[in-house]
Image (tube, rainbow, N blue to C red; front, side, top):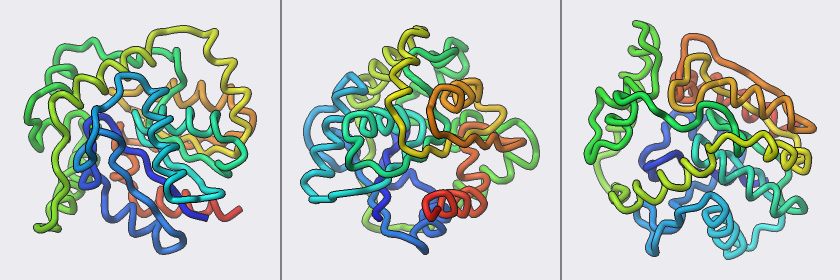
Length: 250
C-alpha cells in the first residue's frame, strides 16, 4: 500500500528529513510530491486548501492508485484531511503530523517574531530552529542534526518555492484557521483510522489542535511528543517513522 506525502507551508521535496523518509520507506512504497506550483511543479499554487486537495487527487489519479495511505504535515495535513474526505473509497489510513482541523484554535500566528521568520523571503537555519524546534538544548541540538541531514545531498536539488507560492499558501492556511467550531462536524465523515501527532510545544500549530482532531475523528489515536515543537517528526525521526509503520501495518 503506497504512502503519499503532502508537505508543509513553503516546503518542497528537499524539505523532508531523509532519516524519517528512509525509516518509513524501509517497510513500504513512499511517494513524495510537490503540489501544483510548488518547488519543481508547474502551474499556479491555489489559495485554498480545498483546491490543493483536488490537485493532489488529480496527481494520485494520474498514478492510477486504486488504494493508498496519506501522510500530511502541517499545511499538508490540512490537504490530507480534504483528500481523505473526498476519496473515502481510496484512502485507507491517514497520518496527520503537526496540523489541525478547519476552524481550529490559534492556528493563525499573530506573534510578530513568528510571522517575520515564517514569511521571510529567504529564511535561514536560525529561523528553522526557532520555528520547528523547542527552545531547549536537546531540541535545538536535534534541529541542528536535522539541518545537517538536509545538506547531505549536494546534487539534483528541487527548485525552491516561489514567493507567489508562499503568499497563496498563506492565504489558504489563514482561511483554514478562521475559528469556526461548526466545521468540526465534518471530521465525523473522516472515518479512516488516523494517527495524529505533534510536539507538545508547537508554536506554529499548537498541539491543542491535534487534541481536537483526536476528539472529533471517529477512529484516531493521538501521540504528543515531549520537548518538541512543530518539527517533532524530524527530532524523533526514527521513533516517529517506526510508529507510522506500526500504525499502517495494523
